[in-house]
Amino acid sequence: MTDTPSTTTPGKPTTGAAPRTTSEDLAVNFAEIEAAATRLQGIARLTPVHQSRQLDTACNAQVMLKCENFQNTGSFKFRGAYNSLLLLKEAGHAGVVAFSSGNHAQAVALAGSMLGLATTIVMPNNAPKVKAAATRGYGASIVEYNPSTTQREKLAAEIAESSGLPVVPAYDYPHVIAGQGTAAKELFEEVGELDVLLVCCGGGGLLSGSCLSAAALSPDCRVIGVEPALGDDGARSFRSGRIETVHNPATIADGARTPYLGDLTFPIIQRYASDIVTVSDAALIETLRFLWERLKLIVEPTGALALAALLSGTEMGHLEIAPGARVGVTISGGNVDVSSAATLFGNA
Image 1 (tube, one colour):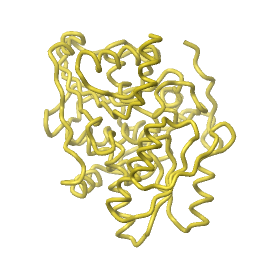
Image 2 (cartoon, one colour; image 1 turned 180 degrees about the vertical axis):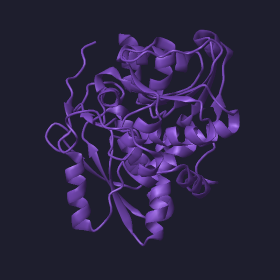
Image 3 (cartoon, one colour; image 1 turned 90 degrees about the horizontal axis):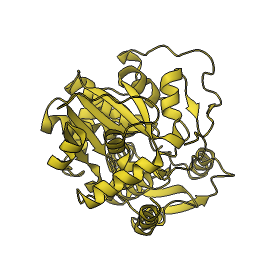
């Protein structure tokens, strides 16, 4: 598979490898994840951990799937959105602006509805229809844009300035990172320490939060991010030590089409992650087939990234799992456009 050429992000470091950060330099710590867990108690779902002898045999490991496809709005994004919006409401804000291709959009929309906050979502005009419809259904106002000609961050900032509302980014925001970290916190508290934790990676919100929880609750666990091969900005950034960019990657993992890791998420990942690896879209399709047909779990392409690395191997990076290892895998979302999924399986 041919990788999309990457570039360094304007305004980001462009030469040399950045030094590893210390925990004191980071924007979020585990205490903030614990505080987020308290705010989410009774609001976010305590999602199940799924195990399968068939999966264990296929991977020659003890595999535990943290099923965030059963979370409110169908993805882990609800955790960070609700945590952030609750704190903004307590600070006196009447609404928020966000930008997202789908899962963060839905999460912000539902959290806003629950908390009585107005929500405006900047959303690409090619976003999955099922996600756009759900976002509207939760009461958000959607502002569509053409991702080929418009920068979503700039458009969101313009709307925020004119409306006087704060922007809640999808991943590069302390309260979002803290909220996302509660998923791994729950996993460790339920199953105990792990040898490896595999986490999908787009902008790095879930991965950075998971790293912080692992460092606190399972310090010997290797945390490994997984990206689509066509959107490998995070994997390249991890190796080069500077934030690199891939614009609008043509991957089926729409939730991982983020152009680069965040200024807040990248240092956490640098400090605590063991690696970021990539998987092909073909591997994603086969993993979706396994999840749907064998495990009876409805998972979207992005949500299957972490398991695809375990089942199918990697394109960038080498994933070495000892026989019988205890492996956690985050299934990040299940918001599937059924007609599109059927087409993918038909072409596999």
